[in-house]
Structures are given as C-alpha cells and as structure tokens.
Image (cartoon, rainbow, N blue to C red; front, side, top):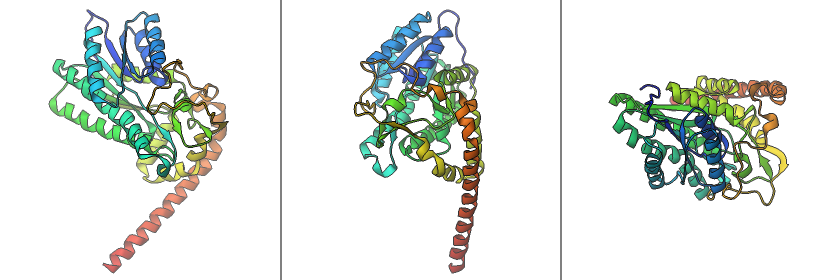
Length: 348
C-alpha cells in the first residue's frame, strides 16, 4: 500500500465523518485549505452548515450529507451521493465518535450499544463504503481516527475504550487483507490524545460534575495536521502526543501497569469542578448541534497547550508518584498471581 496519489485534472475529494464539530471540523477546514473538495458527514444541521461555510471560505467545494454513521445503509448512500456531487473519493477520514461517562455497571445497555455502534461500527461502515469504491479503482486512502485509549483503558469510559480497542483490531485485520491482495488502497490509523472539543459539553454523563479531558490537552488543529499528514504520506500508524507515547509504550511493555496507573488518577481527572447544568445537551442519540453551531473548539482552551501546558507540567510530580505506586502494585499483583499458579500446579 502507498500514500495518496491524485490526478491533476480535478481537485481531490476528502470525506470526513463527524465533520460538524471538534476534530472533524478542524480536519474538514484543513483539507479545504490544502485544495481538497470536502464531503461533510454528520447529523447536526447547524454544525454541518458551519463546516460547509468553513470549506467554501477556503475556496473549496463542500457537500453536506446528513448521516448517522451507525447505520451502514446511510453511510453507503452518503458515499454514493458524494461521488455524484464531487467526484471519486480520494480520502476517507473515519472520525465520528460518542461516549458515556459512567462506571460500567451504571451504563444502560442501550447506551453502551449506541456508543459502540457510533464509535466502532461507524468506522467499520465508513471503511467498507470507502473500500467498495476505492478497491475498484485500486487507489485511495482511508484514515481511521483512534485514541491513546485504544491501548490503555481508563475508568468511566468503558464503552469508548472498548470501541477504540476494537477499532485497532479491525484496522489491523483489514490492512492485512489489503496487503494480501496487493491493493494500492492505503489504510492508516492516527491515535489522538485528549482534545479540546465540544464532546465534553454534550456527551452523556452520570455525574453531577462536568466531564473534562485528561491532561495533557491539545487543540483540534494539532490533531487535524497529524491526520492530514498521515493521509498524504500513507504512514501506517501514528500516536500523537509525547505523554501518550510514553503511556502506550509502558502499557505494551508491562501489561497491567496502565490499569494500575489509571486506577489511581484517571477517575477524578475526568471530572471538573464545574457542576453539570440541567439544560446540558446530550448527543448520544440526537445531535446537539442541530440548531447551534459549536465549531471545533471546546471549553478547555486555556489548558490546551499540550505537554508544555504549565498546569500539566505542574502535575508531573504527582503523576510520577502515582506511576511509582502503580509499578509497585503491578509487581505485587504479579507475585500474587505467580504464587497462586504455583499453588494450583502443586495440587494438580
């Protein structure tokens, strides 16, 4: 598989799911600035209208396609509509997501299912719709947006973490199939850090305290740049953010370390001191940006300087202590497990 190759007789076409807000909104604008025509797939009418305005102001064509990515038939129809309006799809970005902030035992089964259908199956259906068109031409690029939480689960986000872990497995299996076939369609994955997007203002939550991203936090434009660079280069996989690279590497080298580390700090770090307002919207089943355009940015911009944000740097001594405690707990857990295994073997 190789990177993107475009003909020079037309503007290349990019499809972005979850395009009405957050990272998808930033990606759509950045593609337009690169000379792409952009198809905007999402549910919220006001958000889609704002995204289309961004694309057109950058001098590109925009196709607005309202769609629920959890429904394959809608995604497939959307892909056909895009090719009719803009031309053959060159790049497809699977970005749409939703989540539920709650302990696993407090998430209603229908809510868990819905979060998985949007976040995981949305990538499956988007990839399938893109491949059905790209494989026939033997060219094109698909980028699936992952997360550091595809490598290390954290409390209160079991549905989202499970979905992103599943996205990784789907990506690797499908990429292996394309390699086996000798296809020139490129499939990549970009794993994002915590991002300052509106999702924290409208995701479903079981808590009275407002949800927040776990620091370090990045702005959507940083993620958009990485996603577009990956699409253009054909790079297989990318983890964005220095701190996340450390956590991903640690969880891979020492299984169980991430669990212990997340158990010590990630619960409270996801809950701000702001109370949840009674009028707070929820986008799990209906779009929150149907009447109001929220744009790309969330409400944590003053903390969204990445690794070098002063508040995050100030938290590193505490994180180091928690990491040391997690390492000790991981060692103790392994010792207990080894003793139990030895006891079982003796009895056998």
